[in-house]
Image (cartoon, rainbow, N blue to C red; front, side, top):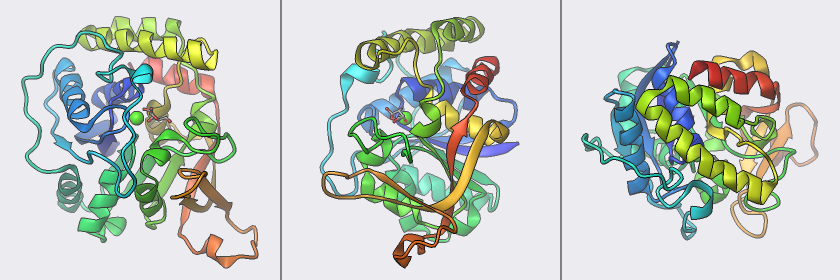
Length: 311
Ligand code: BDR
Ligand code: CA
């Protein structure tokens, strides 16, 4: 089983992944940390608290990055996840309060309280992980695993021709986190674009999730319109749930070891760079960063079935 901190910017697909983290019997959700990204950070925190309450759980939620480390913040694109992050459906208020600590401090405290046991799963821009590393560089030796939904190796980008949204939204943080030298797996568009969650899957999910199901299904309908209109796909890619699918069902994925980095400036900002291990590149600086694992292929139908079954 896995003790995780879930770092998130909910977000329709984030909400699905949060539901999995709340429900899966092999996941112990130690807390959620929030970041701007799909929405501003206050909205992200509200949504994380709300989803936990709808699942009748009391999970600590610590608020984090309100914007990127270096570059100016781009406003969240309201046509993808809705202005409220959950497809503009009407949402109840939250009763609970956020954790008094900032996200980075929460990560540092929690990992140090359980050395060697905590897995960080990050499915938004990764400023909170970068800030946590700044507070405590020894985290690299103390986490069990880091799983990042973000990036793209061969697939191309989704916000620019070369950049995936979570990398693009804070490329400086992403570079720091991807080159930190902790046990890291990148779950990017190469695999998430092979997974399509249909209306039929969502109908099954809604039926099993009570009050939470209404929010998942309502927000999904909005997200699906975006996919139909802008991408010509009937269904949605459950990007963020794929990070949890890799953690729980790694046999459904093909991964490769290599050295990662992220372009921080210029027209290719946010592009993920991957140098496969052992290819003997001439420029050594490509292989000076520590090894990471990247997901390159997936059994997409099996992952979507796993998500639906879990929920
Ligand atoms: C990522 O960007 C966000 O919009 C999604 O929630 C996901 O984390 C996909 O590129
Ligand atoms: Ca996300």
